[in-house]
Image (cartoon, rainbow, N blue to C red; front, side, top):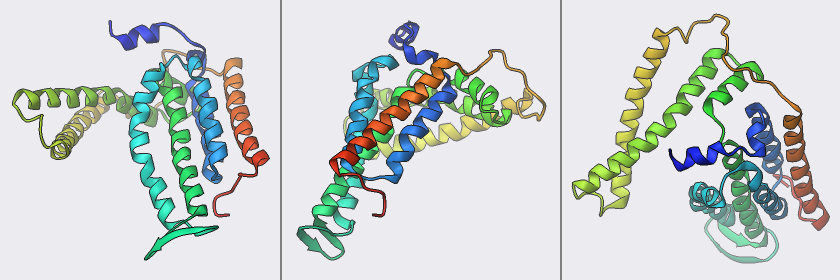
Length: 261
């Protein structure tokens, strides 16, 4: 039995929350951060979200590992804002269209923190969500079309296969003595091969699902019922409270800014 299965076997509070409620929580946590831009609200949201990690059952090490790609690429958005945001306050330097000022520095920090604050809820809320439970909730609670739901389920199930394919290709290249040099070239070549695998697997999977009648427009039945409970209301209410506290901290400190202001 794998370590992930052992972790999944120990239920935590968030496991009892309906996947549709988790989607609602992501929307609640994301929309205010998309329409406002300041460092205080984003930093407060990150701290409060990290305090909720024990409720998710995801280890801090796993959160950091999955957040690492975001931390690597988030500075790209911050640098663009640092160089090309509207100047304001003290100007520290300029070159052609790039200008670094107090305003651009504060906006760059805010954007950087916001990228992390937007990615963190996705990691925490869906790290332990079973794709089948998500499909059941989307069909029965959100009332989405069954064809779309089954497509989402099939796609989610193949994500793990892509990870295994990547690991297998890396081991095969290393066994042939090709995995120790040219990291960038190796990445793009493996990514192209993985893309080919994805297209072939997707084509076969779509044909198989059509052959089994998954594309029929009839009313479908579902083996496992999915419904909203009081816990779901508490979870969504907690997300609203978290975002209210984050925005309130920005307002109290005078740092709150709306996008475009």
